[in-house]
Length: 184
Image (cartoon, rainbow, N blue to C red; front, side, top):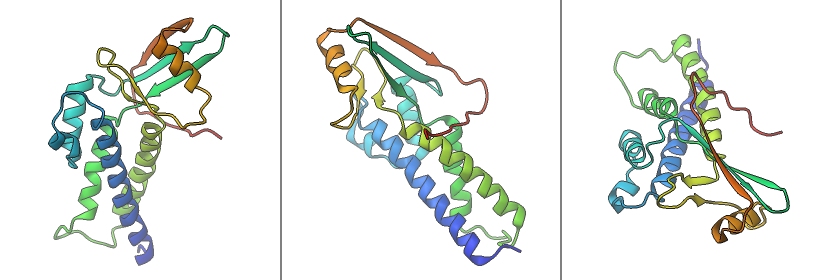
């Protein structure tokens, strides 16, 4: 039998994860050229996901942008989407957050599934949030967000001014589930 405190912690974690997914989708949507304010402020994962998919057409692909400076240094920037799997996990969190008649609160298997799903979802959200590129579409221009003291700002300025030694763009198309391990 699951202790009440464990169930409460898992429910809260599901709420936090779902809110984090929605917030990251909204952050990406805020930088999509040509969408309405209503679309950008949408909170529903399914609708936000469709808006971003139509705008970026990136699917679950990860984009790496390498900017080589004349000094020989190379700065790397990444676009990591809110993947379809992460969106699915966010939607499934609702199954646990909304009261549904007939569910057994003491079903250990159900809580174990939620715990496993949260673990996977937190890693995928961490990966998406590590993305510095918020708008990966080239015709409209990349939108890169960095801290004021990030040493890669030099590379962004060089890219903007056309004063760089080269640019490489790579896309990574996952062929299976993504596992993300944070730095450190």
